[in-house]
Image (cartoon, rainbow, N blue to C red; front, side):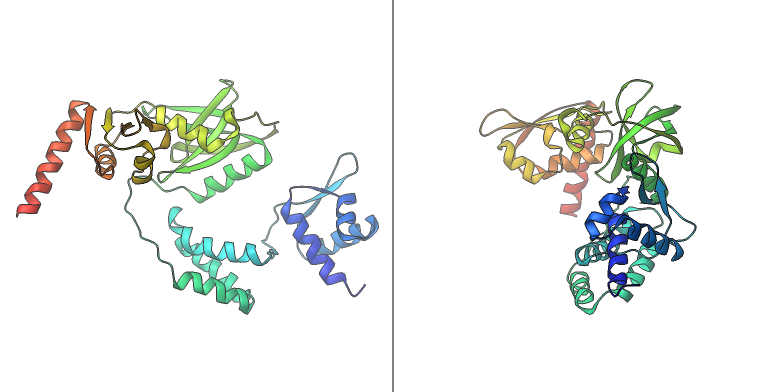
Length: 320
């Protein structure tokens, strides 16, 4: 045992956590030791409960696998702060995760060095989160985690999917990216049966199952998953049509409204059109109210009727 063994073991563990697989040669070069030393250190990690697997290939390698218990994680300063802040502020977006996130945060804060604990406390004491009621269902953390792993590992999955018309069908896909938008989570995946890209809402996915089949990812059109999904959401069929011609520049409107950027199109330097179409009438009203400019509206009768009723209720409330 050498005097630098503990530091080297921590460094080795940190490296194994940053990538899915390392070759023994790469690890030896990073740590400045021999391959034999790496093999001994891997055995030491296994004795401590870390599930390090050997992999086959040209030169063999190592990777951290799932085990029967959760061993300690090694985080650098920036990762520790980011994890603590994320646990504190983001728990409300996952169903049933509030208490679990707070327990994890308490464990993390207990072992943080004083200098980091002070920084995390400062962030928590000087920030607050407004809890908005939303009609959007929150994501199931187990489903989110399993799909994220499939995206990372390039492993195809099957699941049952409920369409917007209420029908259910089994899908087999190559998952690529998870996208959050407007309180919803979407899976961007390449459907193997249709040989095309598809977008699936996570709240409509049930019975996900890995296939143990790994694939080479297809390139996403435009090389930007978020932009691709945003464009598809913007052009998806909606129940209610509402197109506003706004007397304000497109750039100004983009800063004022939650509308997707692809739904805002300039007509001139001083005007633009905003596609406010949606499946929910209150959402259309909220988008129009946020414009803060004069506009003319081309919309379905149900939309104009809802807006008149809403305006009448507001007027009545203001004069009561």
